[in-house]
Length: 149
Image (cartoon, rainbow, N blue to C red; front, side):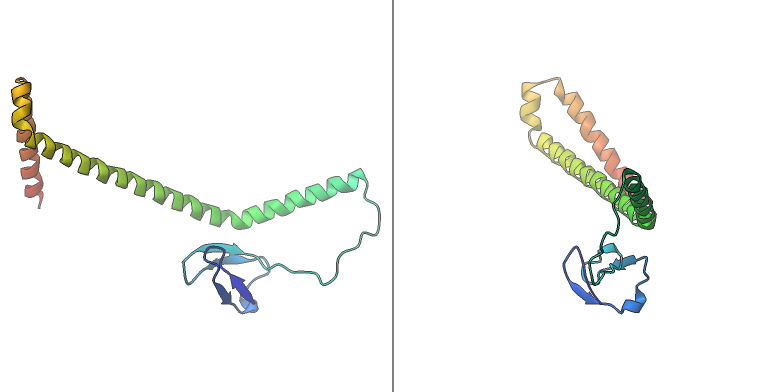
């Protein structure tokens, strides 16, 4: 049987005896995408309706469809959990990305203030003490980090 990856559309030939009738998770060897594959049995001829369906018959069909949907949901529950783990990893990656951007922006601001220290102190004389304390604190942090290694 030939199976196509839904992500990268690459086709693979798989022995049909390896696929259980209820389906299973598959992983693409090309893009590492994981998806649930269920064997679809196609009937050779169309089904024919032998009798008329009343309102009660329709409700029975709806109940059967709900039961089938619940079975499919239970089968795919591990796949849904895997997706939630991936979303959590993406959230963690975003947090660290924002943290790196914040640190780089802070360093750029310190360099800019250091470059413009003299004109800032001439314009705002009260800033001299604040800038001195800021640079002393940064020097202490630098020494602390160096001592950690």
